[in-house]
Image (cartoon, rainbow, N blue to C red; front, top):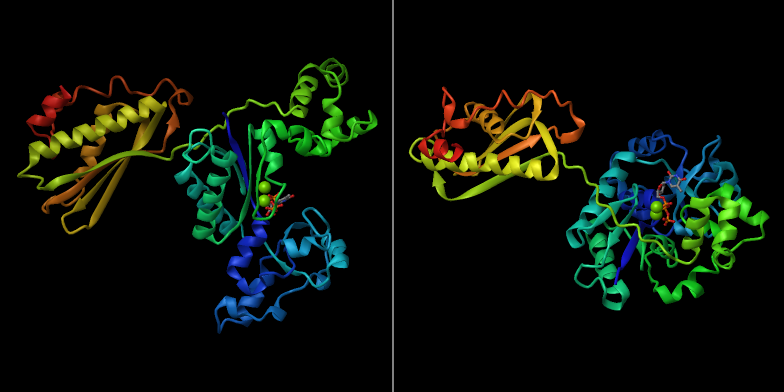
Length: 412
Ligand code: TTP
Ligand code: MG
Ligand code: MG
């Protein structure tokens, strides 16, 4: 049984600011205005103390705001006054003059975005990025993903994100992405909502048509003119009628959506930045005394990285090595080629060049090979001079370090 989750962070930009200024917890806070100078001023004025000690009454208030700025988001205490995303700040000031105003810190937001997503990926690997504060997660095959309809795993993810970042999120778990997206809003903030196929009528049909992700303001207006206001109103129409009014593709899709049908997969599309292979030796090895053994390992690492690249359909341009010495010092070197490659011989040669630029007098405990500056193999020009540039390793005239008989035999 397919179980798909949608996870969305609570009041994300505002919550990130509250981590910096915990003294504002529980207060109405809005993000907007866009001038980082607001709190630069604050930080300078209270440079003598940690930011968490800046008194609450020193923060700028919405009532003092003048300008045409728009609110990016608001904490839940501010929302109780009717303040929210996309509202003009002057208008918001009339509703909640005592709200504290802070600008957004995009670097910080991106950092937390990466961080909460990596927490999720460690628990459930099939994750689809849907922007700065939300993801879809395929629970189907994950341990605990089916228990209590997904609630057990959802709770674990919430707890893990909170422990790693101090941030809360809300999760909806449902048979598909379409319903999960709606469900994640049901119990915001810090909530979990479980929807089963049999719940569509009770939980989905009463919602306004706009709650379907894919019905925008224009379609909403048209639906209203046709006297359709809830998702149930759409579901009550025949597929043909919807096709007649909204066209073949969109009408049919709308019918499926209203009945809670959606079989889109959760697509993981994390583009790798580099691929690497490394190995820690059973015993520390010396470049000269253990040359044959090291050479074989080195060639093997290059071959494996090349296989990884080919299997995943990538080519790379920067070849690098990593060494760790017996005293745990680490050295890295890299070299950028003038063409993309996934060829083991080319990688081996470039990595060998890098090896000549490090100290090899000391024993080694780890060796790694990395290929970076990746591109999709089918996206780079077919003229890459790969074929002529890759003679068999054994035919090299200037053997690099580690190039012992073992390595040559492996390559042959
Ligand atoms: P949302 O997830 O829509 O909102 P939110 O996380 O602030 O609140 P909720 O608890 O309801 O999920 O958006 C995520 C962030 O994206 C939000 O914190 C600020 C930013 N954002 C904009 O920059 N412009 C916008 O119009 C909206 C809606 C959000
Ligand atoms: Mg959010
Ligand atoms: Mg969101």
